[in-house]
Length: 478
Length: 65
Image 1: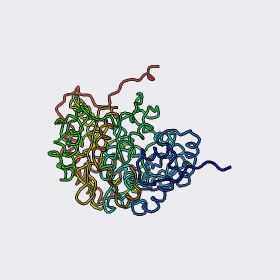
Image 2 (image 1 turned 30 degrees about the horizontal axis):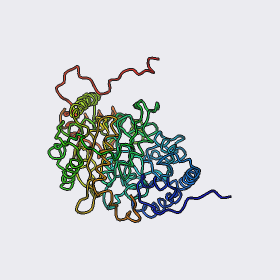
Image 3 (image 1 turned 90 degrees about the vertical axis):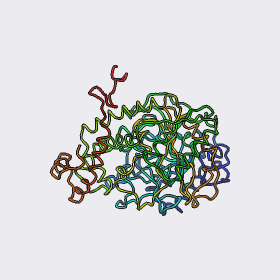
Image 4 (image 1 turned 30 degrees about the vertical axis):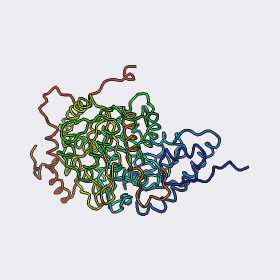
């Protein structure tokens, strides 16, 4: 007797995790058909977008069939069971190539899963493959590696930002419903901003870094990237929790990130750090309008909006950059000394910088970090959240990304790597030429429930989640 | 920290770091040295000798067991 099968899908992709989970739970959609639909989209679009570096199609279909059988047997594990995802290719995956986008690891096949891969698998997700990354999550788009950089689904001539570039492109194009990114100075929130999706950098220590290639140990964060904040909450629920394999892992109980969504934000106190985007690094007109409009939307939803000021963005960027340069140089010192030429030109350049930063510079940066964290703590004492720009503007052309951008412009996302506070990038509109613009909300440490509730409220009050890239617009269901 | 770096100083720092760079890479590194110097200047504030760095740590329960 053949196993019972679910009905054929009413909708395929793109859709949100939340929408798919409802259909899967009601048995109106089969994980097998959902997975096949994603694989079909990958086959049709990955040649242009380069979002995946390695596909696990057979494994995905096997996992989808297992999910279908479990759901039919009344043994669904939760809202992620049967959901197709991708993992950034610096996340170790047992038996699956993990190149870190580098010739140095071109043949690397880990013998264990990273903690985040393990947790998502335990939640029943279906792994479609490994997504494109900047080499070792650094350096920018490289054209001298075996794997071309990912392209932006809103316009493939444009950059995705990075380094979680493939996950950003894949989610925006509906190739996957969610994925993992990593964020050392903005590598989740940057691609989320430029690809028009939601990307959450959780509080430092909330999601285990075990099994993920380091960029800078004290700034590295692992987090979800998805179409909506609600989907990020669903993923975070599976990802959060103490892991003794990560020395920075926080031993705290995991709250419910999902049940508070929809509860409204009346009375929340939100500070807008205007000087970041108006004085320290003026943003483009579309972003300026998006921040102003988002402020009004949050006020209309019942939040109390205040002005808040902290040290200039340049101070946060300098502090984070010196720490990042030094910790990266330490992590990759052996290869830099013996095989520097095997890295891409851009990563060679980043590693060279390590020679210019002294030990005293590094410790002064760590002393500045303590001061900056204390300053943010003080500034947020009477606040629940802060609102800032997520990026200085829309996605540039992919061949116009400066090699030394860390010296050319301060980074809007770095303050929350330096402080370790949670932050999310949200789509907040579109430029006249159809590229996404974004805002960033940040919360207090481990206050992701509040942050996600506000982000979800903003998305539901605005029309931006109803618009997909043209190449991905067929059969949409929110 | 000066905004420029002499060739001999750069060679010393690269040798100490164990990096073997091409002349073109060295020339490029010299052009961005001012950026590093500016960052190093920004993290130095009047703070006195007692100011602690962010990574000072305490002992966890498992250390004490």
